[in-house]
Image 1 (spheres, chains in turn red, blue):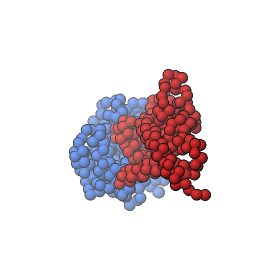
Image 2 (image 1 turned 60 degrees about the vertical axis):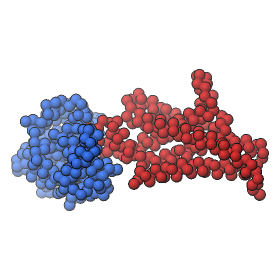
Image 3 (image 1 turned 120 degrees about the vertical axis):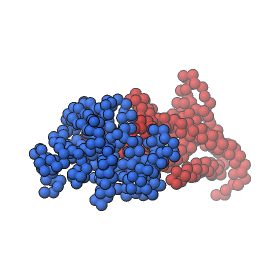
Image 4 (image 1 turned 60 degrees about the horizontal axis):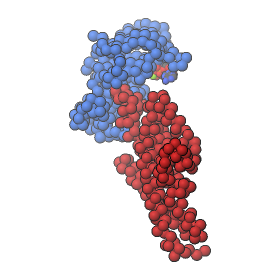
Length: 216
Length: 240
Ligand SMILES: Nc1ncnc2c1ncn2[C@@H]1O[C@H](COP(=O)(O)OP(=O)(O)OP(=O)(O)O)[C@@H](O)[C@H]1O
Ligand SMILES: [Mg+2]
């Protein structure tokens, strides 16, 4: 098999543009997840009974469904209730929700794994429960949260490839249509792989840095 | 004179009765030791006093005020745990300073100064910058005592503070507690260290099956145990 360098460079610019979309979707849904996850985790840990049940129900449902189904729901069901969003924003919403739910569980279990001793010590000093969790437990849990969270965010970036089904022009969608247009398969697959590795690799490296910063 | 009055404290876990109507009085500056067999409800009793356990029945009045506001109550009642429960991500100084800073509104400098003074008091000057993991068990427990004192409590609760310690470290912790008592601190100490009880307690209570079945000053407690089960308990624990 001969690697066709001409084809490789001919289609690269289109894929780079697609990588930009992947990056945008990923970062936006990541941001949404980071916003929602602590709220969900705190609702589950501290909320009054109804709130806790709601948070738990939401987490169970989202975890119980393939992301593809959630993406499809966002794209096809939201307009029926009057919420019309572009494929791009549906993708951000769906992936953000999925990421938030998994991240919330990571945060919750990290805090719970600290054991009740830390919490009781803080309570005994006079901290209100929510302050004990936010000001004493969460900073401690951070170091345990970061590694699995990085994993989860890598998964989120990979899951952005699912947005090809709702015609978001991200790496997988553009790569696939290029392959069907041109029958250049390997060269394009290699480009897709490189771009994903670069994006996911940067996120991983960033979080390692952060981890080391926290560890010091 | 009276600092704490508890009446009819009861606590059940499922069908098990852990506290079965306990009455307890503590005078200001008094040092009370509580002992008793495992499962007799000692921990449950002192955890009910700062409401880490919510009693099913009974009343607790501390300093003339019924305990309504949980946080306000706990700020005035210090607690030392068997397992120290220091915050592992903080240095000794920060462990002590964090509560006064966040709960009493002290500035960082004020809180740090308070922490340093307390570290000095528990013989740990020079260890301020160490995290708990770099301290021995006995040192950690002394930091935990300092942490509780930093809130300037009117009452200190100890739940078997030396049970998790190697024998050679028990003494250093007990010495700090004796000194604390001599300084006028009101304390309730759950412990099986009978040497400490003899040396430092004003009264010793014996719990069995969720009740305080005997209460006496040390001399009488040891020399004329006022309850048959206490006689057996002392025989076991003192190794007669
Ligand atoms: N949260 C809980 N849930 C269920 N049972 C409990 C709980 N806390 C305590 N108990 C039970 O209540 C009883 C009294 O417990 P407590 O911890 O007060 O005993 P203790 O006198 O401190 O014993 P030890 O010397 O072993 O510390 C025990 O039988 C224990 O199993
Ligand atoms: Mg106990």
